[in-house]
Image 1: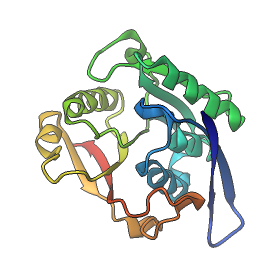
Image 2: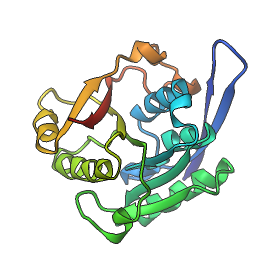
Image 3: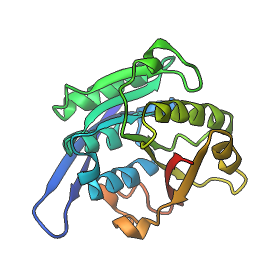
Image 4: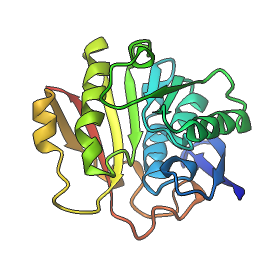
Length: 217
């Protein structure tokens, strides 16, 4: 069953606003519906839209692509990526793009931790996005290997990542060191993401969402 969820982001000080339409499918595959961390990352992008305007942005594990679409609507040149072995998720990314008139966005299948031709051909990104990629601990090392590779192309790149804290034992601190990366936590109140109802949705209510900015050491 397919449904459509609408997210809206607006500036409290002026009339700037955007609306994002996200087609979702009730399906056990991770990327077919919007996870609670995605609106938080989308809100951070909206709040910092001057940092993405005119920049190359790559979203990993894009799923329904809410953060990437917000970046695109804010003037970024966006490439969406998700797992090569999930063609339905990639197609859902494309449907999200079409639903918002963002047909110039590229959708690319990659496999985290594998240096495939598709990964090698990704553009030099100023900003890398990832919402709730840190879900399954077996993927953590591969995710950071992919992020580290993208940052080799641009040493000034930033990885903006939100995730739902599910266990205090699911730390990436040692893996960040392994890949020559460092992370700082961004307080949610710093970009008006601490009161729920983000983007007109209550997806993030009652969930513990964390926001990280990861860069090279």
